[in-house]
Structures are given as structure tokens and as C-alpha cells.
Amino acid sequence: MMLRAITGATVLDGTGRAPLPGAVVLIDGDRVRSVSRAADTVVPAQAEVIDAAGRYVIPGLMDANVHLFGAPLPDVLIEHEGGYAAFVEEAAQVTLRAGITTVFDTWGPLGPLQAVRDAIDRGDTAGSRMYVGGNIIGFGGPLSPDFFSPGDGFGPDTVERINGQWEHGVGADLLWRTPEQVRSRVRDYVDRHRPDFLKYAASGHATAFITFSAAAQRAIVEEGHRAGITVQAHTTTVESLRMEIEAGADLLQHGDITGLEPMPEETLKAIVDRGLPVAAMLFTERHHAWVAEHGSPMMRRLYNAHMDGNDRRLVEAGARLLLTTDAFVWGPRLVRHPAFAPFRDMADTPTRLGESHILWLQGALERGMAPMEALLSATRYIAEAYHVADEVGTLEPGKRADLVILEADPLADVQNYTRIVDVIKDGAVVDRDALPLRPVITTR
Figure 1: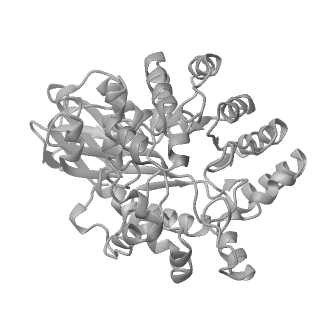
Figure 2 (figure 1 turned 180 degrees about the vertical axis):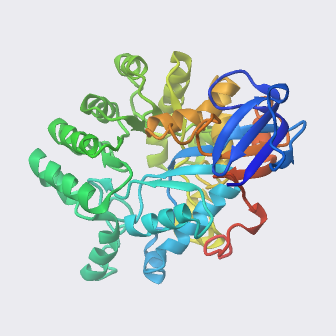
Figure 3 (figure 1 turned 90 degrees about the horizontal axis):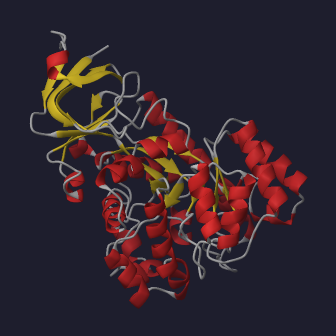
């Protein structure tokens, strides 16, 4: 096993402890052996030394909600059918290059996602560590009314074949089923396809409609917990959020979005009292201003002053927020696509994979979050929310050696998160200049 010693840096270990100046991070293979002061550390003679004097070391960053296959437009789906894994691989390399060493994909084609996840884990290709949920239970695939309904443009066989790569038996028809039928389908989905976590629809994708009944939501959560995995829900209203909490979900995806009503005080209190993590899309003030002036009616219903106020109240109350971008790779072809025309001039776009996590951190500070808390929201809190904190999220002995070396203090200026010297994942230095290895989106 290779030994590496990173010396001289100030370490922000992700636990919330005070920064440790002049520290040594000793890496044994793919694990952290120790994090300690230089005076208390003997660096083995055979260790490769990385001199990081004057620099800063943080845990590898994490994103609680990404879409690595982020091109579900009808023409792209047809043209690249059979090649979705190439999109996923490139996106995972875009995030790794940006210092995001772990991502959680919350909606996508499960087979290609798992194939790339496993290739990365085997060391066959580079990329962020991936945890994947597959379909949002209760939603259709990309060629459905929940996303990009093709109308009569495609034959039913084509629509069914493509949507099937997302749905796997837990699509929109579940909304017609009894709680026990829902339970049976979800159990079959988990047992057959082995997602890393479950995400279900508590409300519509862009509507205020409640989807599953309270009993059906409890059945979904119970099936996830039976399998030993976490469960979250897509929620966009005060009632869908309340129902998700009562169903026993482990984390609240978009829990800060409550549409035309602010989050009720009793809901906020329940979140804080139960320690429920909220995967919140914290926008910058510039982006909120753009939405208010230029956003579509749907955007103004969801990403409005109530959302902003909810975020500020959550921060003030001490709720645990998770860095969440909902991001995908914005390549030239997608930017030119007519479907993206309304977003081309967007201020501080919050969904650009590999970039918008910086805007999330800026938005967090603008809403009153302390800089150290923002770092924890991008590392430890996400690992704890997804029940993987025994492996990642902090720089502590025995955990995976995922870290980022920065030129300057990220607590002093959020832009310092972009001043990357090195990214190390599983103890190996990442060749950032080589990524992505096989561009598909970023060059087209």
C-alpha cells in the first residue's frame, strides 16, 4: 500500500473542529491513517510527501442531488440510445475535476448509472464516487408528462422502451394503486435492481398535486428501511412536505420549496427538533432577482420569496441543510437547444454541474450561514444524511482519503473553493487536466 503525507497545510477536517494549522495528513493506501500536528507526527521514510505549506486541506466535497445523465431531451434520448453511460461517465468526471468527490444521483437511467458507478469503484475509469437512486417512484420516465411528453411524435414502443430504462415498474401508474400494491412494486424494484437509496414523489414535478396517500408513502419508506437504505421524497408544497415528514423519510429533498405558502412554523419546528436534513437549493440573491423578473410562471411559483424566506428561517433555526444543486452538464448542444432558450441569460445559474456548488455556498452565506457550517453542509452533513459517514464526509482515521488541497482559506472567501491545487480521491492524486477523458457533452 502506498503511503502519502500531506504536510504543512491548515486542515479543515469537516467535523466542525477548529482549523488545524501546520498539520500532516497521513494517507495509507485509500484510507486516512492520521491527521495531526507536525510536532506530533512521524512521517514514514517511505512516504511520498506532498508539500502543502501555506495551503488548506478540506474533505472532498459532496452534492446531495445531481443528474449525471442530464440530457433527457427527446432528440438526445433517441440519438444516443444505448450510449447513456458515456454521458454519465463524463458528468462524474466533471464533478471530480471540481473537487466534488462524492455525488448522489436522484433521478436517472438506473442501468447506465450503476454500470458507471461500478466501473469507477473498480478503478476502470475516473469519476466521483456515485450513489444512485434510479427513478423517482411515482414519476414517469423522460418521455412522459412529468418531463418531456412527446405527444404523438414517437410511437408507443419507442416511448415505452426509453421510459422503461428509468421506470422499472415504479412509474406513474403506481399513483393508481393501493398502498399494498405500491409496497409490493417497491419491494420488487429494490430486490431486483438494488438502488443505493429511494426517492419518491410526494407531489408533482411542477405541480401542487399530492401524489401518494399517507399510507402509500409510509409503505415506500418502510420498504426502503427494510432494505437498509435511506428514503427521500420530491416535495414542492407545504402539505407534501408535512406528509413526507410524517411518513418517516430520512432526508427532505427540496424541503425548502413550499410554493405559494411559506413553511408553517410547526413544520419548521419538526424539522429542527427531529434533526431532519434538508436538501435545499440555496440560490444567490442575483438568481432570485432574475427569477422574479424573468422566470417562467412555474419558476416564480416555486423559486419565490417564500422559498427564500424558508431558507433564511431554516438557517436561523439551526436546521441541517445539504448542498444540493439538482445540476447536470451544460454542454454547447444543450445550451443551443430550443428547450433551453429561456435559461441562456440566467443570472448565477444554479444547475451547472461542476460550477454551481460554488453559487450554493455563496447563497448559503448570503442567507446567514456561517462559513464553517457551509463547509459541513457540503461534506459531513450529506454523508450523515445518506448514512455513509463511516466512509466519507470528514478527514478522520479509517475513512476514505478523499480531500481537496486549496490555495487559500475557503472560510475567508467562498471563491477560494475554486482555487484547487490538487484533488485526491481514495488516496490517489487526480489528473484534473485530463478530465473528462472521453467528452460527449462538453464539446458538442
